[in-house]
Amino acid sequence: MQVASTDGVTVTVHDLGGDGEPFLICHATGFCALAYTPMAARLLRRHHVWAIDFRGHGDTPAPANGRFDWNGMADDLQAVIKEIADGPLPIFGHSMGGAVAVMAEQRAPGSLKTAYLYEPIIVPASGEMPLGANPMSQIALHRRPSFPSKADALMRYASRPPLNGLQAAALAAYVEHGFADEPDGTVSLKCKPEYEAATFDSPDKPTVDLASHVLSPTTVAVGHVEGDWGPALFAPAVVESMPNASIQRFDMLGHFGPLQDPAAIANAILEREDAS
Image 1 (cartoon, helix red, strand yellow):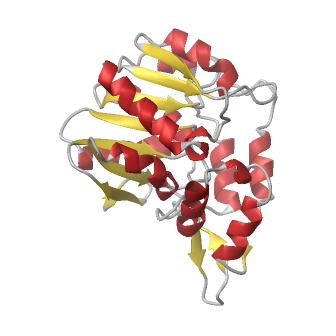
Image 2 (spheres, helix red, strand yellow):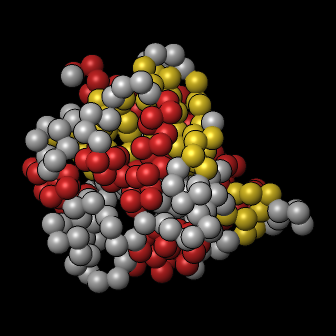
Image 3 (cartoon, one colour):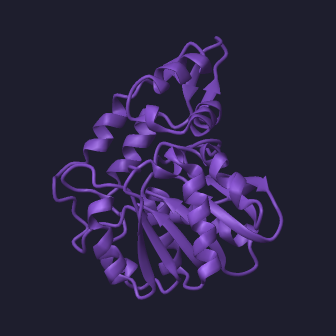
């Protein structure tokens, strides 16, 4: 499905099937909607599952004006929610996707019935990154943009960190749907390194203060702490700030948890719904 957003962007939202209540998956920076199909497969028993490609990711083109700030991503999400749901819907967000879900709910309270957020990037009240420039943007800029084939890309990713930690089906789905076929027979990243870096560098990330206005029942899930500063470390402050939130820990997983163990995260989502 194609949905009009701001900045001339036409957002692609993928219908993953299933019956029942609509459920929307929001991906992390640099990934794409269809990388989460292994997780979605377990949600189909209860939901009609949709997954969004944010601007410059997957099958959604980059905005001509180069606007990759997270307010633009929230515009994309709000446009999709209006298209696929007649009322509040449950949502899953990973990293950036989780943060953008919080932004969308803060803008339009009542958009989200429930939220299951895995390590959302919600920063301290100042909105500043305490370690200065985001190192992830520099890593993104140095990503290899193309490969001779998808098989070559898959072999490389499967042989070295961090993507070698992904579950095999999730990694295969990311490579299959995250690369575009070029006329010369090679493949290239749909989310170009410069798009990914610009997304990481966006200065308008949601803050703990903004999250405090979100009333939707929310689970903030985290893996083990990686590094000196990150979403697993500051998740307790996020949960404490939100009126109706709780934390769930997956000590054996890292920041890529939903792609490392899709079944565990899907089961956790369903269990939280059963308990609500």
